[in-house]
View 1 (cartoon, rainbow, N blue to C red):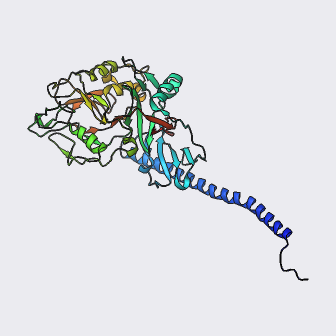
View 2 (view 1 turned 60 degrees about the horizontal axis):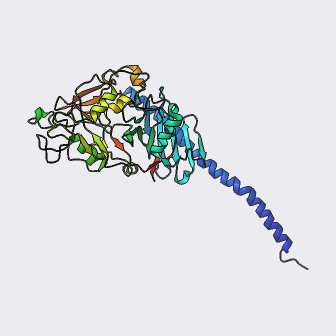
View 3 (view 1 turned 90 degrees about the horizontal axis):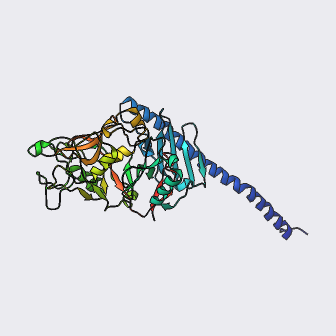
Length: 424
């Protein structure tokens, strides 16, 4: 009789054979897919590192200020659908290291300290999941691993916990989708951050030529019901930072010199994730002093005092989201076991090389000179703390305090693996 169909035994045999083929083939296909993904993200990391080193060299040749850390988007254009929290850090020779987290098609991949020669990308390993309140976490680090993280208590009566020392020592980097900030420490009972890079050079304040000789005023904000001689209630930089950078609506004019010299306003605004974490009701102290030959502890006390040039119209405390560092913040960022100088004598290699806040450029602070109407303290390009006219166009580096409910989600605070924060 002619056979027209498979027997049950034959069908079972075929099914078994197909199952065996699937068992063997599917993992191999998946391995090929994953290998391709891994190779693709590693190639991207190598490209970023190579391009970053070229950019670093170009900046040196052109005499531009070179920072230790860059957002990858400053080097190459990356798809926000596939890459997250991408940063580039440079060692003292300009060699680039790239750290990136994959999302989208690269979900689960993490590349840490990848170079142009070698990228170290792994899948399924989320490093340092923490999920602990930021204040408690930093306090615990101070109690258990202070030296490894560059943490000390300052010598003020408040005994704030601060990150102190060189960039090679402190682990205080925080990334918000590649926007890098640094943790100053726990100051006034809150986590205080400062942006890694300046948003541009601007006047602290300026005025028309017939008002205070066009020099501006060292009044961050006036007492309610009072105005400056030009009719304004806020410093130009207060408006730029809080209404523009934070609020997203820059004024029609920004200033970069005497006599209200107009300068193009910045375009950058605060990262939306960070903005949701900022304490908008933080208290900023506006007390001043008139001496440069002063230790950080003494400056800290003056900052919280009431000595200002125009005590009749100037606030000595201000509540708001964005300010600047204090001179004492800069003073305490140095390793005080190596640099014991007064603030005006920080301009030496021992002090600058052991101070992570030193930026190699003029940097504004919040504190006014109490003897003159138009002078504020700043950090000079050589590293000393001095004071200069408020109309001068110097680097603006925003500082913020975080709400008390912010968690450290992951990371170890290094430049290659910065902390990632989230609200509880």
